[in-house]
Length: 110
Length: 114
Image (cartoon, rainbow over all chains, first blue to last red):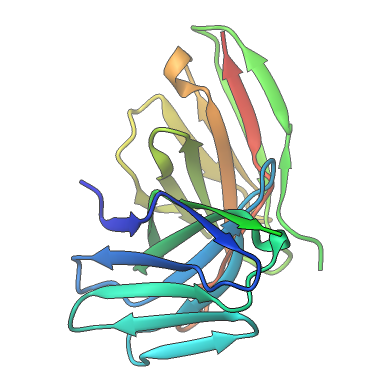
């Protein structure tokens, strides 16, 4: 049973575009929602994270939007660059156990 | 601060053998988690250790085991390897404090079972 559902599986955008990656969860016990970025041959790197008591968090060009009632959260990448081309994973956590989405492969075309 | 380190980075084993992977967490981090990453299943949680005790365990067979030492370094062991165990094994560390959940991953160990 997939605890966190992530979409789309892949995404192609032009440089400067705003890719949006969505995740949904069911378990209301989750209290921490991070996003990770992974480049080929590397481990996932923590990008940005949010807790359910806020609806939005921005760090640089990355924004998380969180909808607690809908049990959904999404990652927006403003002014995307070719260097943002990577796989992005959302996750949800409670009691220090993490559940990951299946990943979104993002390609930013120059 | 040095990041999470994992050794070895690459490993080739044959079916039936066993393997031990090692992880050194970020200095000061006391929690270490292990994950298996495959193209088909994504990132799957194996187990988490804190202060030498296993706190959480994922849905993997008993062939997968781990331990944590007093210096927070951790090892995971897979016995009787199967072809399906071929994967990237990731270790992540976090600082266990009140409300601190940030988890930092190492580069992984790529295990190939032939």
